[in-house]
Length: 364
Ligand SMILES: *Cc1c(COP(=O)(O)O)cnc(C)c1O
Image (cartoon, rainbow, N blue to C red; front, side, top):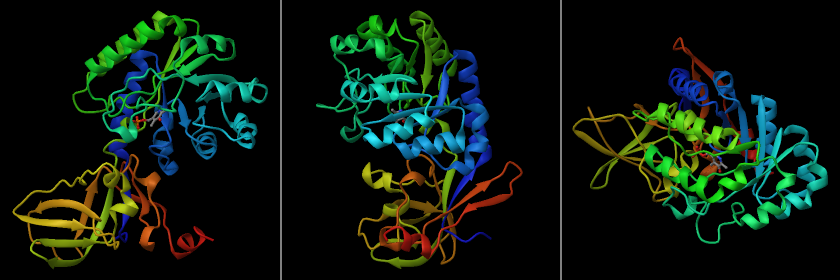
């Protein structure tokens, strides 16, 4: 048995998402680029490459990873490029997307040889969480003044508009796209491509994928552009778990089980967004599942199990792919989960293990 903790990527679950991806691309004509900031576990890219058109990035390193480990079309976005990064970025990127007009003008000469774009901020979004809302007050994420955009239109061939966040509501998407068409349509009409960013949950159960496809196709046709989407979460949702073992059982008024993992170190987003972990269990034996770091609030959540837990029991925490593996860290020196793939035939492949040398080398 593979020792815990490890992240387990299930290629069969991933394949189900990729089937939806293929269908959307085929019906809509839109291209789908994997957003590496959500998921960059490249040993899984072989299972994704044939179903997506490439990658998009938030930094030089993600950009390079996309070029070298995924291939196909490679979009380079960054909130701000340093001068020495741009020279290298243009060697990997098919398109470079600037966050501001000021960066576009500053790096005009260095980037004139590849397709360029700007981030357009429509000043609305589906996010209600301030931390993750690109349309929050005084947002630094993109340009919106049409007069300023018109003045540099001859330097760019497209725009990227990222304004959805875990949006599983097609009607809301439809309404907001209509708003973009109304407010920015005249500008979009002269472009070659428009990326509508990520955050659309089209791989979710019951999502009206055909309606989304038709809407995207109509949008692309109306403005004469190639539409892109940049799915992160939608590409890998449900495809990975965090496999752990029970190390200790206590009762401090509640039954507690301490596992060989840590929310802070291995599923940080749960703390940031104050959400409990997910486990597919039920029964009459409730436990609070706790991490082994010394942070008092390092708690995965409360779950009820079919039988009392014992030391050594294995547990599986769901939804450990998106924004999870990319954020794992060495807090408390907790052993870092290995990365394991479950192949389509059920066999397990260990892609990467971490040891003391990785911990030591991380800080010196
Ligand atoms: C975060 C992000 C994405 C991916 O978002 P998901 O919600 O994971 O689909 C795509 N594009 C941009 C610009 C982003 O910032």
